[in-house]
Image 1 (cartoon, helix red, strand yellow):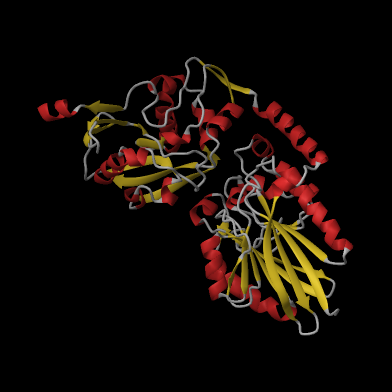
Image 2 (cartoon, helix red, strand yellow):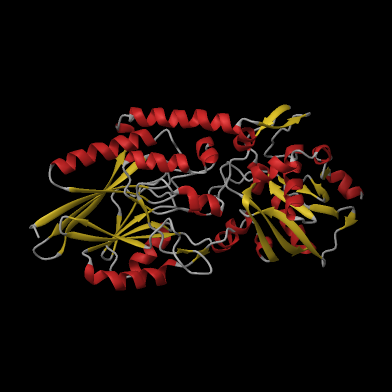
Length: 484
């Protein structure tokens, strides 16, 4: 082996279908590859998942295949999947996603039940050789167990698998690299608990680590989100002493690169194709459906009613912050629904007591909750918003700290001891905003259909639309409350 071997790793993560940055990323990858290879150095290009996000019309219409072709054209060599690939695509669409990929997909903790085999489109790890340097490239994605199970997959915790893989590979490779869509906190845990990991190229938590972080002998990197940066790791291998001589990390700001013109043209053509596909009319709306984040609206009531019907529950609940655009009267297309409800969020159902339901509703109407800013868990909006309901009629006070005065469930007084089946959104079962929902039982996730796909069906029901204009919430003044 030569005295030294220099490897450059260019990595992206969490692009979330921000197609505007992709042509500049392609230029960045090509420019640096040409520069370094001209010096006799080696280059590896990888993506750490969530390249795709179905909130964009191109990804929605193609079920992510537009993203895969862009990765092909950008020169990506290896990738792992994020939760946006893993649990926002129906299983058959995920199985088809990488048919035309010219790069390897590495997923070490996703399996096909009941055979416990790696999906046919992936490998559990890869051995990559540059010169005489042998690299083991591993890949792990965040284990959202219930969601993956509902989609027909088995997802496992990464630590036991990583220990087993590293033990089997470490003696036959020089460097071990992990493509981790597990999040920063988990990456730090892996670095501190697992021996033999040299580099963790991270994603999922959207951290920006300008020069990476070192924990023990492991370098952890992450390049923010949406393609604002491309990460760069330079590794110098000492061939005489068989060890890493130097490893350092930095970020390249993609704004400093010109767009790849041919890729820009391809992205624009994909947009035209997607619009032609998704702007087909679904229904003719007779009334405007206006959104509103801080008050009850017919549109909000309709989404709650749609969830209730879809889940077969007695009650429907969803936050008004989910609605990002009005649905004006006239012809409605699926593209309009995508624009209004872009979130990769699904319906779910849970059984809770009347007491727990009351606590959830009272918590939901507090001003600090209504105006609370939300991030993550699939939410693409800004604030929580007013709690939209169906199957309920609620009287509440208008004080600085509002209180529930009376609740009717489908025309009957609420029984605090009785169990009620509530249809709501899966985000509430992950972000822990309403702890009493998490105390419920018989949690069922309704996948793969996202909320906009649910509405594409229910919005054809004229009776449901008319019923949505009936108020569910009645605000009682302090005077009226005291008189009662």
